[in-house]
Length: 212
Image (cartoon, rainbow, N blue to C red; front, side, top):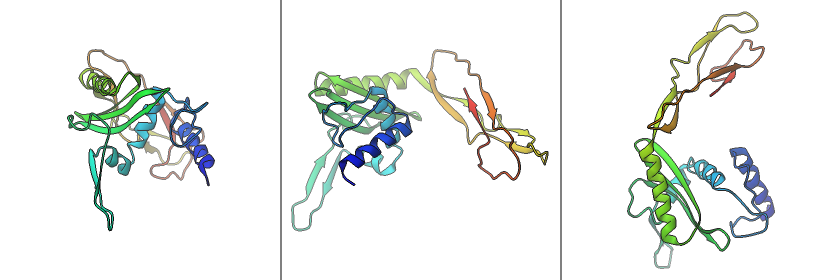
């Protein structure tokens, strides 16, 4: 238990999800020696956190009233400046420290696209909101979702190493990515199967990877 153990778990989780340039030394996020992160890592962390339905619901809420037994109700307000006037905004979190300046991790959903923008060291509260909104709108206006792997098309049959009946395999699902609208992108898929695959195989069992 204790803060030190919790910080250790925070750093462990950061590594697990790909935030490799992040190092926590406290649980508050306040300035401290060797306490650091990057815009990319904060986007990775925000994306991971938004997969939690409870978290996503909280950061998308503008105001909330807390009832206390024997006390007056207390209303708390989300400080994210983008929530009030932009219906597509879904979160996430404001921040400020003397070293980091005015910061904002913002997320939005439009036309089936979920985007995140990270603003660090902004000059003031207004600019961080304006910049975050501009980044999100740039993404919505200039990128589109494109299917690069179709589960049905990518399905194939192979023979196990012990020579039993052929096995039908396929990706877990279709793969969609965000790509620039005005650019043609050629994507090459490489299928890599594990060695010595033999029966019995279970439905959903991983037998290889597709790299792009």
